[in-house]
Image 1 (cartoon, rainbow, N blue to C red):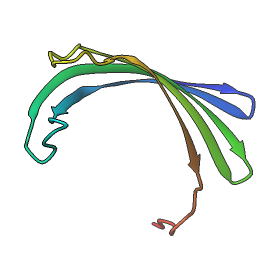
Image 2: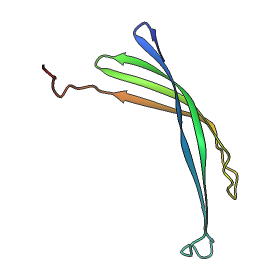
Image 3: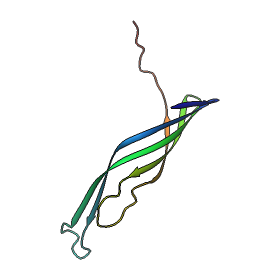
Length: 100
């Protein structure tokens, strides 16, 4: 969903997918010997919001998501949900026009 806010746009959305967790342990005495590997794949859903800000020909887009996923059955507990922030910088350019 997009919501116009003057010269900016607020974009909300939802990401659905899978998340893979992996833990590998090795002995400190023998680091070359393969250790134990635990893996787990969990369902993931992440609502997000982005604010598109135009600065001349460039778009600056801060994004905030909150990831929810199942807790994998690994040896040590891991954080399986939480906030993630990112910043996108978009420089549009035109490669050619389609003419009919």
